[in-house]
Length: 277
Length: 262
Image 1 (cartoon, rainbow over the protein chains, first blue to last red):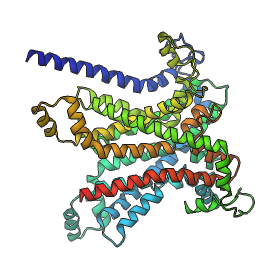
Image 2: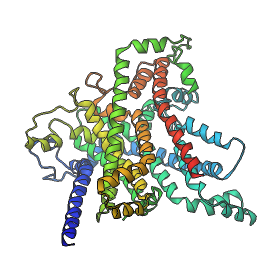
Image 3: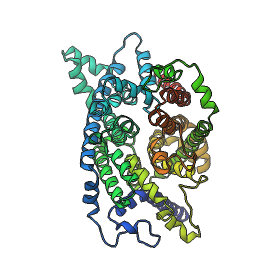
Image 4: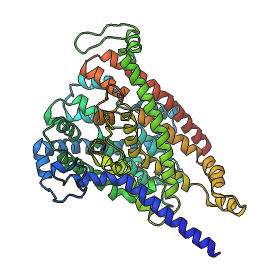
């Protein structure tokens, strides 16, 4: 009995240590990025320098923002990501509802077609997508950068799966009371799918905030650049200290973390982790 | 996609009108050693990432699932690697792996001399794979955790009463019941790594030589640096074929689980 308790306590301690080590290994790059963004330019690649800056160089941030047109690039990224996220959420909820709760001839095939066509990532369809956008004369425009991402097949699937388990009785009762379909969707369905919608929101925001290969292809004009393109140009320019790149990287990370924190409870549920201690 | 297949049979360059040239693009691709090296790199990359992401994700999920106090917060912290913008990930790792960077600093007490992780053709690809695993494993950790939480506790308790040890329980309860999740993770991780672009593009630029060039980079370069749209489409068709193989597997899984759920 005594023995048992000792063994169990040791196991907990060992587990705790393993857990801390793993967590540290995973977040170390994030910590280092943040610390380096305050580091003096010549201390970053110095085998003897300490990772915690001896002097905090807060001016790295304004310097970095001033060096290229980063405020503009961030604005471009924000506009595109917000439009993409909003449109994705809206269309995936509508399409998901249609596919989950309405039976019509060929409904299964519609789902399969949506999955098999829209699931192709931009890396594969780069050339034809570019030629289409080119024909619309949307090269170097917001609509050109955002268009390919406005509806996401994975999102439709995710939302459909979360709606499919909602009992049809609710919907029929509401229909009996004379509620319109949109009202049913908004008042009855959406509140029950909040976790799935939260997961969709964070992922579609991250996806468009991260998007690189497509803006690289379709944007040639400096006014339309998104922040990742700005960073790459920064990167190619050897005159700029890496500390300032880290400052921009930190600024780019903050919005995604904030959205995650604000949706965190719903996201945990959406992943099916509500039972976790 | 149909359009891409059509284009892949032409010599379109965005200036002159496209001419039908049959399978010429594919023939010249097969003869091109850069293409062959790139295809091989892509397959190695997909294989390496898929295996390591699955194992790491499962390992992390098992540690979190021990139910040690505070594991919830550790899980959230690890998940942050999956939310950080990819461009930030690439730049940070590029500097972490710098011959005078922090990783060199960490390894120095162990007698590891100067290693040019990124510019050495033997270590460049493993380095990119490690970065990819770092980014994606925590996401799959969450997928695995959801799968683990769905396994009824009674099974373990019953096995414990019967005197089964932890290893036996893992092998005979956890693994079989987690099999659909494992399969899902393998397919999704393979699809994710098939489309990778930014990591090799930023961290190594495809080099040294062509050691880390992958298909998506070749599509971009061929189509938009050399304006060979026909040839780029042919490469897209190859990448599409690889991904289609995994997508078919995935659809099979979806329809399967649908039937099981009904």
